[in-house]
Image (cartoon, rainbow, N blue to C red; front, top):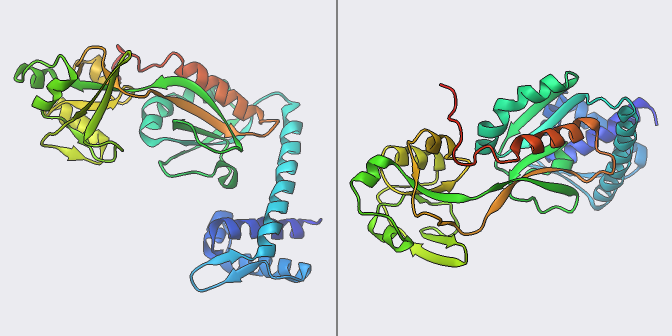
Length: 309
């Protein structure tokens, strides 16, 4: 296979993955007309139509889908061979593409990436912050950092830290409201409602083997948890939020835990996820090992140090 034929295959994969010649051109940093000619040349060489073209979208034919899978398998083998060869140097290098849960990534990973880069001067990092579903294999990400596991048999998940949700409020709010000693007391308080929560407006709480389900109400609801944290700090009500999300507010006393021992039912975790290739590149292994060390024990465990001003 010569360089032109290899380029035709890469172009074809980009078109199928993105669903259009224009999007594929942006990914490959080429003109859309060049992308179209490469695919047409590939179809002519093989003597079969690989793509169905319409004014709105491009999709693979049955033959195109089968061809795509075979080509992807072959390219995965080539990448594995290249990674194995690079690993003989036993030094992490090259571009590391990482996708992170936005809020968690900005708070607990991004501020420390320079530490990793200092340890591995030959590595560059491209960090993507997104809540959307990411196909790590198709989109070429090396590592994902997520709250909870990603259900994909092609991936390996490693739980590196616990994560749960707690109940808290501002001292200014608690000073002017009735005592909060049991979950049932929440019904007499303004509770800040996070509308995307699956069980909203019911809070499911647990302490040891005890469980309570309380239907809460309040004057503020939002689909933005950061807005609710700000409202809680301002004294607007009682908040249920991830412990890692409110760690700094707890550390400096702007929020305090309530309902001693009671937490949201069901603890999850912070997961570092990578593709399940037999020989992960040195850069990927180094990042996973480093992040596992950074996040265990969980740096947001109460109390924690507040961020520098």
